[in-house]
Image (cartoon, rainbow, N blue to C red):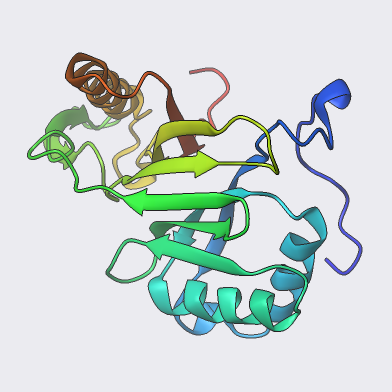
Length: 212
């Protein structure tokens, strides 16, 4: 919206401190293909107002993100860059400030996020296999430096997990549990490798069923 209300959770005594990295996760919703039309300038204005270091976005494609970054850079206030998974819509991406932030996209660990899980139709009892991650996570190394402050660096997984499958009348709890286990293993593997101690999992966890 032209005059957006701040939807983000901010720790008041940390806001604006130069030693704090400003990281945002946002399901931008269907920001891909023709559905991006008419939205780019408004979103660019919105993001430029917040001046955050790093945005983890879901439901995007590379073309839309490139156009958004071009619009951000055309405003002239800051210079931005991006990383985005290839493919059609519904991909995860990352937009970041070049003056404070460096992002290096990492290769997905082999087979870690390719698993399947059995789901059961609550109505018919029919069983079927579904991919745990219908959309691949975007894995990145992120480093944020505000002025002369100490660097804030971490390894990041930007994910869009599935909590439910309406067509199967399935709560999706099993899918989300399997996704959580895969992400836990990813963190454990990274800790075992050494060199990085901080990990951030961010994105849309699709927990729309409060009873679950």
